[in-house]
Amino acid sequence: MRFDDILNELGSFGPYQRRVYFVVCLMAATTAFHSMTQVFIAGTTDHWCTAEYWEDENCTEWNLSVEDCEEAKKNGSIPTIYEDGDLVYDQCDMYNITGMEFDPSYDSSMNGTAETIPCQDGWEHDKSQLKSSIIQDWDLVCDKKNLPDYAQSVFYVGYLVGSIVFGVLADKIGRYPTLFICLGIQAGFGVLVAFSPNYWVYIVLRFFQAAGNKAVLQVAFVIGVEFVGPKWRTVTGIAIQIFFALAYMLLAIIAYFVRYWRTLQIIISAPLFLFFLLMPFIPESARWLLSHGNSKKAEKIIHKVAKVNKRKLPDPLFTEEEVKEQEAARLAPKAGILDLFRTPVLRWRTINFIYNWMVNNMVYYGLTYSSGDLGVNVYLNFFLSGAVEIVGYVAAIFAIDFFGRRPSIATFLIIGGSACLINIGLPIGAWNTAVALIGKSAISASYSIVYVYSAECFPTPVRSVGVGTCSMMARVGAIVSPLILILGDYYYSAPLIIFGTTTILAGFLSLLFPETRGKKLPETIEEGEIFGTKAYDDKIAADELAREKKENDVTEIPLDDISNGKANSNKAFESDNAV
Image 1 (cartoon, rainbow, N blue to C red):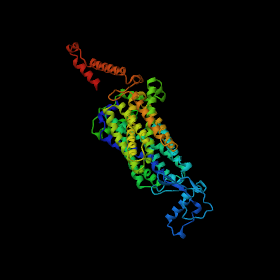
Image 2: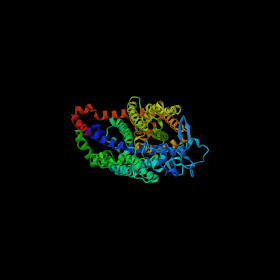
Image 3: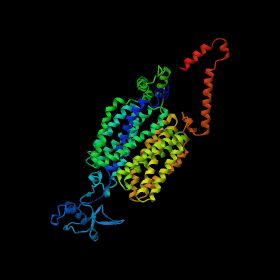
Image 4: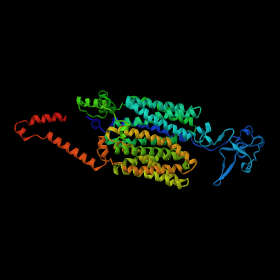
């Protein structure tokens, strides 16, 4: 029996699969904490130069409180300008106050002719919102203000490395051990990050944490989906993203109450070790075991599933011929990345999917990390940004079944890109926030669809390597996303222009993909080349007709045999073959 046939016997999404799926979804959800937390641990706050020359002045002779004294020092040492009617203090320069006596009546706005110099003694930070952050602890401001964005790019390089290394490891040693190795890396390095003494140690630890973080999501997804029958695979493949979005929203709540970045980092990392208590309840992928010729262990797991689901299985589960076929499949040469580019249609389809994945990643993370720039409240905006993802995922589930994959992903991409371009002309406020959230919801929907769509478009021999290659290249989009946001310092609209135009282009290019809803998927490279054309439909119809004719030829009993009394023996022979 094929494994999908076995799943139909077991129940496509029975109690056992639901239990395993729920646990791996919880594991996958925790990856949102670490991939998104830099919004808070590297949150920007107001800052100004430290007036160290006046540091010992306590203002007692002027009967000023500590707060009023600090405000007086700030007013006397920091240049100011008016922006939109508000008084704004310079964040990177100060007056040269060396040799000047402190006087609380000094007003920086009246010292316009005084010499200004770059901050000499560090910075003071506004801690009314964030009590601590990596920016405050290591003064990542002014000429160092882009270092947090570079750190996030390094984090996504860790994503790329983790996708490759642990993807290979999961295929070599199995999904189960790889999942818990990566979970240990994610949790262990997550805790170590909280004790980073400086920026450089921080980015190295975050790199290794990212490698494990991405692999947890990737392997948990595979384990959950590989135990689900074809009927439920699309829904479960997208629904796991809803768990991710819920954790995303939970992070906003935790960060709201925990304003110290080191404490926040420990809170979202240390509890992950509790997942190791669930090791006995997570099975190895039976599909992976079968693909590696371990039929006995696979049968043991399958029978356990049948027992929990209260289903009966045929005995024996695999015939000797099927075991030999599995062994032959295991020893057969596997497709590589180069096989994606050998034939013309598959080559351009692969390039198109790679671009689509890269754009989805780039814009998704770009909109996530710019959620704090929407005004109002960073915690509320971040929470809403996660909530609209759920709307997008639910919409995607219904859209791809009712309207098809191709029009759905194209529509969501065009909506997401258009929202970015529309926001260029909107001032910060309610409308700006609403349009941005619509764009985030749309790009989340398209991101979830591309997982399903690309797997369906690649023919069977290169399906795994095709999706893996697209997923790997998608990390490039995530890596450049923080760097694109830096362009906003030089031209405010640049990130939105890039996000908008590339996404709309991806939407129109996705119309070149074949529709896969209700279609039999290509089983060979040759079928992949004509998939989506009339020739493919004709071939499938011809194959189906030939199969039916063959079945009729086998089951038909000649009249001569009936007259000679051979009917019974023929029926018995056919019955044995059917079993």
